[in-house]
Image 1 (cartoon, rainbow, N blue to C red):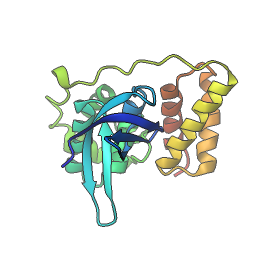
Image 2 (image 1 turned 90 degrees about the horizontal axis):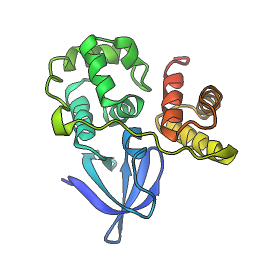
Image 3 (image 1 turned 180 degrees about the vertical axis):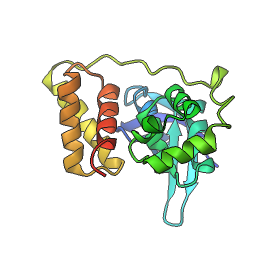
Length: 212
């Protein structure tokens, strides 16, 4: 089992990163909650990891905090019908604190607004996790609020963040045309000064509320 990676951040995209550990490049799938707080490419990074072994692939998932990894594992090991892809979508679509509040309140609407989580899955999350989140993520394990990074000014910065949003949505299974529409709508709603995190989260919410 690979429990963490510490090495040089070679590449960072909204849904995956590449970490060079002593000359070996590891491709790691990450949620938006971790992506938005990564150091600059070329810097050293330490990611807590979860290794999923399938017949056709070994997939490595990475997280900046123990609380993120704990919630990811809780979802895939406890809630029927939730695999790693949807668990990453949950972490990308809402903060851990918001997730806990939604489960505690039985807020199926808020949970089903996450990309990949339909109403039936949201109802299963509430039923199967409501009694298991009492001590989850408390104390030192709770992820700190994600700080909004400095916005990239100008149209070029907005274009870059828009492309990041499209890439994130497509990686989560959204059709390219719908991903582009969501990115344009989010930019129009939030403005050019929105951070990458704000833009992608708005896209995820809009896509989840779309047809189907």
